[in-house]
Image (tube, rainbow, N blue to C red):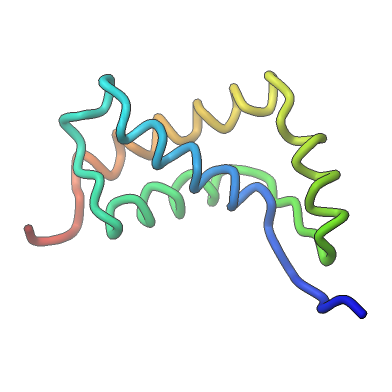
Length: 94
């Protein structure tokens, strides 16, 4: 018997892309603390369509559907906008 889940696959992909982008040479000047990462994810996700699944099989299928170059390009655009938005006003004290 399997345990049901409720997962936003877009959220999982965005979190991975945010971590990857913030550690790339292009974004070294931006804060990459967990607080800023979550703010960037939240901002980007508020401008992206959701893709919820309730099983691990559906999750794998969703990854295949969402990992197209067009979709990744859309995600990257929204994440980059979010990085700059949060970077201007990080909303935390270091």
